[in-house]
Image 1 (cartoon, protein in one colour):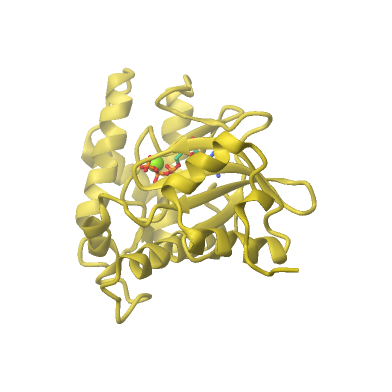
Image 2 (cartoon, rainbow, N blue to C red):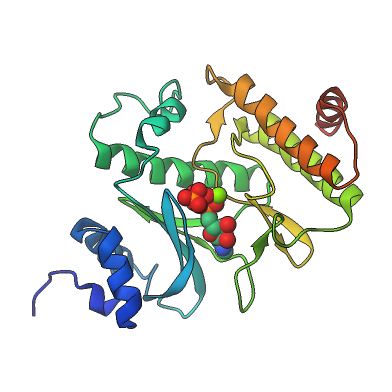
Length: 245
Ligand SMILES: Nc1ncnc2c1ncn2[C@@H]1O[C@H](COP(=O)(O)OP(=O)(O)OP(=O)(O)O)[C@@H](O)[C@H]1O
Ligand SMILES: [Mg+2]
């Protein structure tokens, strides 16, 4: 029996397999193969999202549990931008200049960030495993994946505001991380409760750009809420985060 990893073993549907093969190389298949050998993946069922930087799949593990599998594209257009979020992070030193190495570091960074955030009690998908550019995490959804607030708003904006304030306070004071891309696109509505996703770019509060990213996050949240009738000044939001500490 050949030990060569075959995508046919992990994606049954031919069309889905073709899409995969257009974007991902053999190393990605090998990474899935290794995750499968450890039981984290049985197969990829369908695509949830095809983004600029990553594709997210609904997958099943060997025990038949649903999982979200985020696979980072190696040829991502924002490749250079990624460095800004890695350099200056004390957790990642001697950063390679190789594209693939950086993308794999990015997947590892998202895994580590999710781990830290979950430990601090922030509602994020639980991370289960990573290998190369592949990240396996908790699937947020029931039959279908939960949608971002942008498409499926939580209409009780006072509740949403309180929730976000508490989550950001836990992020900053307990996990000591700044999300860096917090917006209605990266918060899912799961049964009326927010779940924060897309944590690859999160940086430690000691990072040289942490303050800049924090200000941007607050601004995004403030303008999203303002559009929906909840007016909060940036100063007010910052004070509320401090109080929620
Ligand atoms: N754990 C999860 N469970 C269910 N759905 C998820 C999960 N993680 C991501 N998704 C879905 O995939 C989409 C993209 O995920 P994410 O925001 O992490 O990737 P991205 O880096 O923003 O991709 P891009 O910016 O390239 O579009 C989300 O909007 C959501 O619909
Ligand atoms: Mg996103």
